[in-house]
Amino acid sequence: MRTYKDRAEMDERYERTVIQLMQSQAYRELAAAHLFGHGLAFAPELRWIKFMTWHIREEVEHFEAVARMYRRFTGDDVTPVVMERLEARPVDRADSWFELAMAQFLFDRGGFWQLREYEQCSFLPYRDVIGKIIDEEAGHQGLGERMVVELVATGRYEDRKHRDFVKWLRHGLLSFGRPGTEGNRYAIEVGIKKRDSGQVMQDYLDDIKPAVKACALTFPAPAELGLEMPPMLDWSLDGVEASDAGRWHAPSRLAD
Ligand SMILES: [Fe+2]
Ligand SMILES: [Fe+2]
Image (cartoon, rainbow, N blue to C red):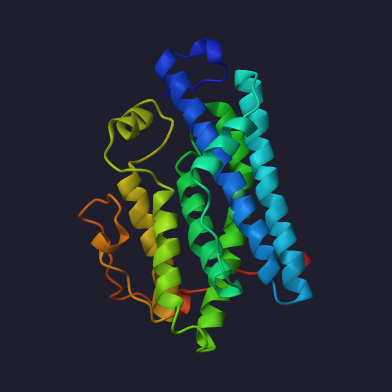
């Protein structure tokens, strides 16, 4: 597979595609920082306040890493582009600590699986930048999953768990973009990404199934989500082990 570093080596379509890719990633990272920044208000204990500031800081660092790459490539600042997009499509917010945990689990895990599709990206600078982001997203969403499972187990969130689940599942699935498009096919063909969005959606769903089962949640009917998804997606929870949920371990800096 041919790889690229500089703009001069690319044709117009490849160049346009990587610029869009960087803009979308920068949007996602700053949107995450805003979502969790807003959510700081719900952190119930000092250790969680500290944890949220750590999470927000990491999202800002992800944004900065993408912005630096963008500037090297285009000579421009991506911030105004992202701010304009955030104004047009403000990030959804969480209204409680429980919902924030759900967002951390499902929105960040969407980002995690989405980025993994670019690990072998033919645009080399992108590979370097996302390596660090993927490692950190693994921590965010893993802790989010554990929090959701533990909070649901208290029995205090029965009246809202399904609503919050559907809302953030939808956001998680939106991370992958529309499946089966011409743009998808092109990006795969030139080695920018590995697979079509539909296949990534399946990995994401399989990955969250143990927690879905552990929380006694059920997947909504695909129509309820109002997203374009391949009809062959497997939503079944048969054979899924609820005990596989929450496998993540806290980094030592949080274990106080
Ligand atoms: Fe991030
Ligand atoms: Fe994150």
